[in-house]
Length: 256
Length: 364
Image (cartoon, rainbow over all chains, first blue to last red; front, side, top):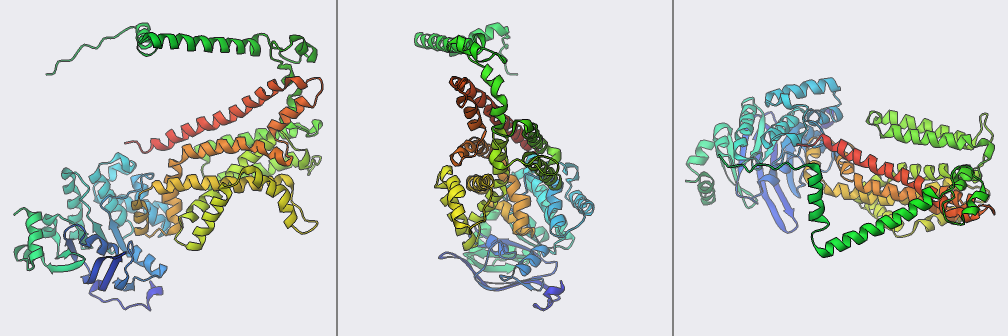
C-alpha cells in the first residue's frame, strides 16, 4: 500500500479510529459525535434498540453510508471522498449482512471467487483453492456447486462469511448476521463466528445474541439514539450496567 | 392413521367426457354458446380450408388457371411464380444466389448465437464480425463479385438485416442508457433521460424521415452516407430508447443488498454492473425484451416510407406491378404473413427456452 504511505501513520495498536462522527438522514440525526477506537484483533459487539444507529455506525466504516462530519481512519487510511481510499479500505474490510446478499445467479464457489478474481486479479485456480479452503472452514465445501437459492438460511450466511473471508480482510463487520435466520440455524452461524473470533480476526458485530457477546467479545458497546451510551468488557457490562437505558435494554433482551 | 379415500381411476375417455360436461355443457346457456361457437369455428375453418387448400391452384400453374377459379380458391401459383422477387426485390436476378446466401448465413449466425456454447465474448464477437463482413461482401459485391448498389437491395435480406442489427446494436446502447438514467452523475442522468424521453415521444416514421431527408441537410455539400445505413442507424437509435426502459425495469427489481454486497467486496461500478447487476436484471427482463425484439422486427416494414424496399414491400410490389397477376395480392400477403410468423414464433419459443434454461440453475 505504498500509495497510501503519505496518509495517517498506522498506529501499531489501533486499527480503526473514529472521531466525532455525525450522520444525518435529512433532518434525522442517525449518529451523534461517535468516538471509537478498535485495537487489532479486538472483538466488539454492538447492541441497542432498533433505530439506535448501530448498523449505520458499522456501515460508515466501509462507506456503505457516507458520514457528514468527523473522521474515520481504517488501518491508517482516512475514509474520505477519494475512491482510492474507499477501495483500499473495502479491500481490508469484509462485511456480512442480515439478509446474506449472496449473488443468486452464481454458484456458492463463484460467489466466493468473484471478488478475488476481479478485484485482486488472482488466477482462477488459486482463487478456487482459497475459496474451497474457506468453505471447508465454514463446513459447507460439499455444497460449493449449488446455487444460493438451494441452500438454507444458515448455510447461505456461512457462505456469505466465507465470501467475505476470501478477500483476506483484516476486519470483519457483521450487521445482524443472525436476525433473519430461523432459530434452529442461529447456532451454526454463531459457531462459525466464534471460531473466527478465536482465530484472532478483528470483528465488529451488531447483534442481539448476548450469549455470543459473553463468549467472545472483548468489549460490548451499547448504543441508543445515535450515541454510544456505554461500553465495557462483557462481564462488567452484563453484571453492572451503569446507565438506566442499558439496564432497561438488558432487561428486555435477557428476559430477566 | 388417517383414512384415505380410494382414488377413483377413470378411463381416459370418461375423464374427457367429465371435463366436457363440467366446462362446456354445465348449463343450458353454456351448451347453446358452446354449440354456436363450435359451429362458427367449423364453418369459418371449413371455408378457409376450402379456399386455401381444396380449391386452390398450386405450383407453377400459370395465371390462366387462377383466373379460371374466379376467386373460388387461392392462387398459390402467384407465390410459385414470383417468389424470387418477393424474397429479393429488385436485386439483379442473375445474382440472387448472393442475397439467398446472405439470408442463410444471417440465420445461421442467429442460431449459433442462441447456443450456450457461444456465449463467450470472443467467440460471439468473432462470429458476428466475420459473418457481417461476409454478408456485406455477398450483398454489395467487390473482390470478384459484381457490385450491387444498396439501392438495388431489397426483400427479406433488408428486413432481416434491419431487424437483427437494429436490435443487436441497440442493445448495448440501451443498457448504457438505462445505467445512465440511474447514474449518480447529474449530467449523465439528464442526458440519458432527455434522450430516452425524446425518442420515445416520436414515431419511428419521423425518425426515419429525419435520417433520410433532414440529416442530409446538415451535412456539408458532397458528403453523404448511404441511405440504407442511415435508416439502420435511425432504427438502432430508436430501439435503444425502448430497450433502455425495459432494462431499467429489471435494474429496479434488484434489491439494494446486491449493490451493497458488491460494494463491500470492493468491486467498483463497472464490475458491479457487469458481473452482478446486469446478469440478473437482463434475466428478469427476457419476456419484455423479446416483446420489443418482435416489435422491432415487424416495425422494419416502415422503412418503405423512405423508399427502402423491405420484404413486405417486395411481396406487394412483385404482385401488383404485374398486370397479369395483380389481383392475387391476398395470397402474396398471406405468404409474407407466414414468413413473418415463422421468425416471430421462433423468437418467442427461443425466449421460453432461454427463461427455463437460465432459471434452471436457481430452482430450490
